[in-house]
Image (cartoon, rainbow, N blue to C red; front, top):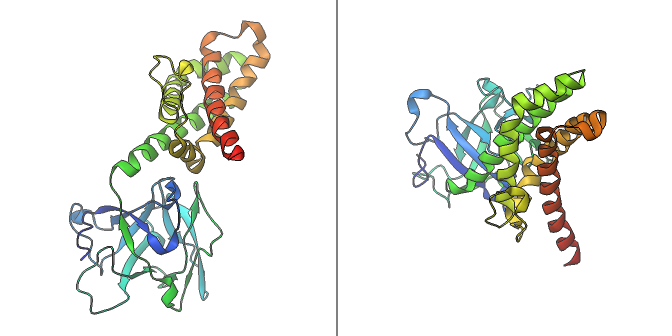
Length: 279
């Protein structure tokens, strides 16, 4: 069993796959395959799913009948391609803790995970594959993390989803009156989310997010980039700007306020970028 790591939704980083600052992309959850195991310990011999915290998707093999299986992130968690299990490097180990080297093996193909790196909601280029031959360089250590590590990530991912949904709701309407109606109907959660993003990323106590102009919180600003929030904010700007361009001075305030919040959030992010270049 995995001692000292506990739980059926274990949050970990794989230490040999990462180095330096640990970004949001490196955080994973190990979820038990069986519902009746919820709340129990994760046994080495049992199957589990690997959920990428930043994207909310699951790691899976792509199922090629070759020596090397490609892997991907998917929402289809119920498929056998998304099942994995641990294999001890030293079979004499009685339990797994943060100092115990383990292999990660696909339950579907039997391939051994070679490397793993995710960027935002996508897998990176660090040889994400499963090899049929096990190599010693493939073993990893499970490094548990606390719930505080995922609280901001979960919030930002939810906000990003709201921004994407609002951009789609507005963009899919043909007439400007329909765009305005969609923005009024679905826009409140995005306005709240944009305000929370500003408060999360910039210090300040002002009641209005647009008045907050303190020191940028660099770690949280980096989360915006790593989780893909900035991309969805730019998409929201593009959709809502179409309303402003058509209505001009007659554009109602409840259409302008999301744009102001978006631009203010991007302005704070730009402050971090300028500061990084000057260092």
